[in-house]
Length: 365
Ligand SMILES: [Zn+2]
Image (cartoon, rainbow, N blue to C red; front, side, top):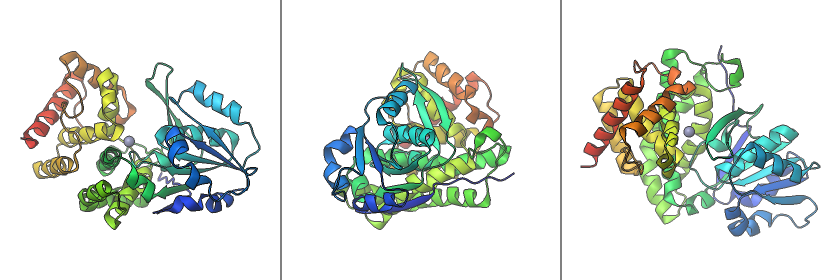
């Protein structure tokens, strides 16, 4: 069975946030903004400029971690009586908005202010425990109705966010190939556990990969200058749209398995999601026995983009026990089964990560 899922609509360009009211009105006239403190401080004037009356919108500030409790608190505070949730900010506030829109059956407009992950377009929220550990993945009935990406806002964010998004997007194509080899299911309504990548899903994953290799270095230069050039626009689309639709439709494997497992040790939180996934992608290529030229190509790409591919660059100095802890978490993840790798025990995963780190160190010499 093939399955396909997607964000409803996607609009990207410099200054598009100024038209947020016009776009949101397509889903209903009463709007609720769910924003983080960065947005509240910097973007509020631009965001609300189109509203001359405050009876058609309300703003709720979300801060802190996304947990079952924090989502319930916001849900109670918000109440009912609005047609559209407009979520503006980073990954956390977007994931909270997905939870609330899904529970209240209202439309969701997502306006990311950074391009650090592929979360804005997906139907997924990642929840944390009260102790701060990632512990639950929630798959919603639908993806956001509209993702509105203002590239002037994205270009104003620090380059590390864009780099992290590039790392996350880099994994999509290779993880899709893992799933192709094993016949593992994708994430489209994954409770059925049956969907496989469609031609459309595979084509998007490939386009994501090609766009990054063509445009990422130039996009980072543009980011430094805070100018949304065509190369920058391409990479933002790759990070947010192509990677987001891509991973849901072709599935994840050990790049995310290892990338997420790095947080099993406290120092793992120093690196961003996409940075850890880039290191995981190098591990995937080694574990799945890719040709040396392909591995070299990815290593050079990572070095050029400033993506960390060594323990040191990830902010780690792991002991043998640390590596075993990461390996155990990686093997326990569902995504490990999506890979055709023959590595299936803790010692094997530890060696895999040590080899990846050593190759990364050589590349930095
Ligand atoms: Zn990811």
